Image (cartoon, rainbow, N blue to C red; front, side, top):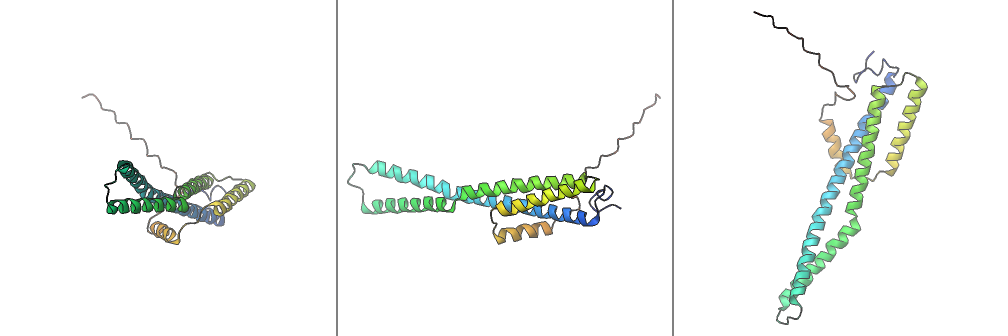
Length: 194
């Protein structure tokens, strides 16, 4: 009997194990995409705060350097420079406090680990061991890795999770676990001499 995802049942994997591995695969893929989206979002915010900090700090430093020894600078300009310097300090503090870069890195690491787990599940599903003890050991190892990932991965906003879940729900995933099909060799046609 063939499962809808390939020949895994012929190799000794029963229907319940097949459903379990498929469910883990789908969750690993969803978590991978969710952490990738979170990491990309946090990286974008890191740059959205970081670039203005650099530009404003440079502008404030230039104005201060220009004004050294000049007494004719108006109070409005001094006030504007002070406000810009304060806004720059606030942005820098916000960027440091939020730890956007570090959090983005944590999500990228979680994404890579879920991707590796997903590949392990693909290999297990495609080349399932015929020995039930080996299959059980492989499943237990993957379960432990899933548990470790769930404990060590950073939290994701519910809004991002819902968006990814909806995106995956609307996609067709019939190709899960299929090996590439090799197209048959074209027949060689010999042209006879006329």
